[in-house]
Image (cartoon, rainbow, N blue to C red; front, top):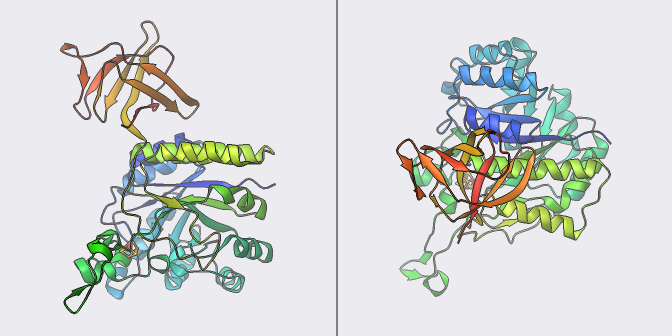
Length: 398
Ligand code: SF4
């Protein structure tokens, strides 16, 4: 069985390094320009270069999204940008424009072209044609069901990338103007305001139609493809992609590590029965999450996906380990959220499963403290077992 790639998102350099340390084979990031998340990106070209050097050292890959829907004005400077990415040895660009693909083949031919889900590729004919034009990989539309993924994988040699986790659009693969209309921010040029997730009241004339006066939302459930991972790997899908470039360090770490473990178990010949799936799902629940569903994987006609209003967090991320003093058992941690003496904390890391301890002693530069509540503060905390930099501490949310 060919090894599948686990592909994770990152909004900035710190998150990208976390994704790679927690088991991603590759990360995808957006630069300050030309990306669908450009409004929120913190990735300078220098950061991308640092990331590529780090990733390549560990034989991992970096893909850069150049996937906004280009209008002529947007094309200014694009050739220089592509040449720069090629020079930095970025492994691939994720693009939605066939025009851009032609430019890449001409001016930056060492960059692989991965065709974005924005192209809504849903069948083997399209995959074959796009690969004849130069596509090195196709990201299938989220609206393709599992059986169709298997058929496409069997019929086509072109590597396929499939979304397995994260936010879904209420509209077809993000082809949406809701945000443009509501906020004047163009969802397809990096400005989505997530207007589909707002609460609405529906009127016919002056008559309120919203049921029981409750607000209506078009917010879709998040995708969680755990029951289908085994079939995707067996079908020969090249890359399993996590969505969430706006998510927290803890989300990136927990979701990436959970799928890493799942993939490793399958690739070592394991079978995910209901008990194993329940375990992995409970691990994913620990990440900051909204209600989830298998999306269109069960059926391309799935329609019971709207109404995801409340979010829930089963575990709250409270600190990241920066250092550990072996001689006295104290860890230097950076505080992210409030915790107190007497709290039970769970520790996890790239090579560490959930181990718990009760906070018995902690101090900062002014002495002993009872409560850690200053975000980004560095404090020392007694931990009864070895912890390493990048391990995370979390507590069960009430
Ligand atoms: S407003 Fe909603 S449906 Fe439209 S692009 Fe944004 S997330 Fe997708």
